[in-house]
Image (cartoon, rainbow, N blue to C red):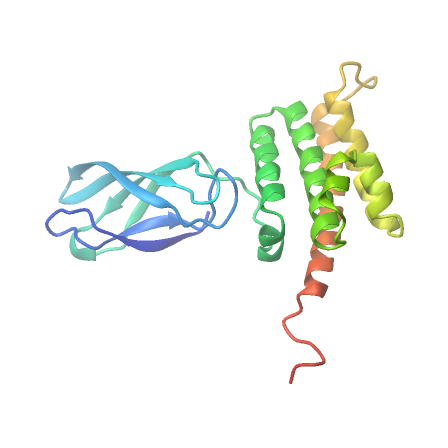
Length: 227
């Protein structure tokens, strides 16, 4: 997980304006991190300070925690010793993060379940993430009425909003159908939750890239009208 430094006043001699390590991405929601930091305690070891911090994400309002080693008067770079919870592994393009932060949050919740081998919960979560992304696309790109979108189930949403996009239909249907299997009491015969999740995520990735391409084309860094 990438970090950056941020000045923090510990109100201790030789440690004023110390440099604190901040995670670039909130490990709870996966959104760019600009947290509210609070120092909970310090231990001095070999003339350096081991500090305990909480970091409240301004996006999801959840807290993550870190233990850091800070050197007096910034004689050496601060060392991030550990943090909790462990961050989600997937990082998304900034365009997608800004377009659908709720999708990003749901994806990382599903990812966290997968990391703990809770494959049924993960499958349901990835399916829910897809539905959020589809409906944000309908609202923000297709300018469909919010009241209509909110009442539509996932199957009908795919049919309506991607009726002329076969690739998107195929990818989203695989995620939808596989995701439904995780939620059903009577699962298909020989259902392998872990193996099926790999397939689901592969097709979800195809759909994510389809949406990202659309966002990139709508937000080009240069255009023919710019010199």
